Each structure stands twice: as structure tokens, then as C-alpha cells.
Length: 231
Picture 1 (cartoon, rainbow, N blue to C red):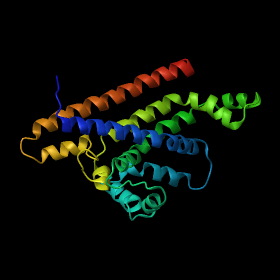
Picture 2 (cartoon, rainbow, N blue to C red):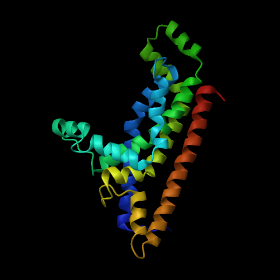
Picture 3 (tube, one colour):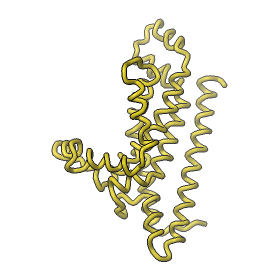
Picture 4 (tube, one colour):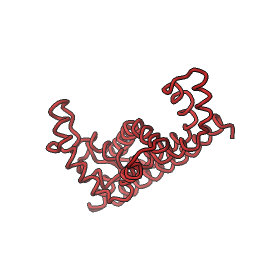
């Protein structure tokens, strides 16, 4: 049986908390942007799509640096949040959740957009003719039909957030118990003598958690497809 030290367990628990929070805050924005890209017709749609997918192609360190510039204590957004709400992101676990959410956001939006694009619009029109307003149609027809894509996006975003390293360490550093995730802990253990065993244990944990998320995404997606589409 794999036995982890207290510091290793702390890194695992912190990674799970960060991944959950990152996915939770990203989800409503992911649904909104996915809908906008799937249904919207406006100038600059291609630009918006490119911006959404930038974290996939930019070096993670660049993303982390941009977050530090904008959301650091002296950044325009970070200073506003601190002065008016007392919210601090830089060098806090909440900042790690923000960075992880940004890095996982493209993987959240893409499946949601594809799911929305495949919905038969006639079903929404039927609901509208029966008296449902646009909001009711969205929550009772559109979202349930897009559920397989939403589930896939959520779990892919969670898995990406769980393994985030570059943007996180740049934005919030590598503070044990505060911002030291599994990836950061592995990096730390590799820098010290006799740290290979601890790093190896955390690598196995990361593999198991990521694989579980991918399997869950496939299984839940199939169940949702069967339930709502009868396939």
C-alpha cells in the first residue's frame, strides 16, 4: 500500500482543493463563453476563440506572469480587489486556483461549445412555442442536452488544474501548505537528496487521479448521452 508522509498528503489535499475550486469558478464562465461561441454571430468571434485557447499554446510561465501583473497586489485588478474586498490572489492558494482555472479553461469551453453546436435547435423552438421563455428554454432544454459536453469539459478542466505547474509556480510560488501542489512538491523533492522516493510516490498519485478523472469523464459522458439522447 502506498504510504504518504504528512507533507505529501498536504500537497495532495491542496491540489484537490485547488482543482475543485478552479473548476467551480470556471464552469459558469465556460458555459457562457461556450454558448457565445456556439450560437453568437458577431465581429471578433474568431479573436475571442483565439483568446480562450491562448493558454493551450502560450508557455505556462507567460500565463503565470500575466496573472501576476494583473492580479498581484500592485496589479490593476489585484489592487482593486484587495482595496475594496480584501481579496488577495498572489502567493495564496486562491491564486493557485485562479491560475489552474485559467489553464484548464480552454479544455472546459471546447467540449461545451461542441455539445451546444450539435443540439437540434428545433427542440428549443418547440419549447418556446409551448410558452417557455428564453431563460427557461436554456435551463430545461439546452443545458440538459449539452450535459455530456459539460461533464467532459468539467472533468478535463479538473484534470488539467490538478496537474498545473508552470503558471501556478510563477504566480503564487511554491509555499508548503499554502501553494505547494503535487506538481510543485514533485519538483521540490527532485531538488533535494534522497527525494526521489517521495517524488515517485506523488507521481503515482498524480497518474491515478488524472486517469480517474479521464475515465470518469468518459463514463459520465456516455451515461448522460444515453439518458438525454437515447443513444
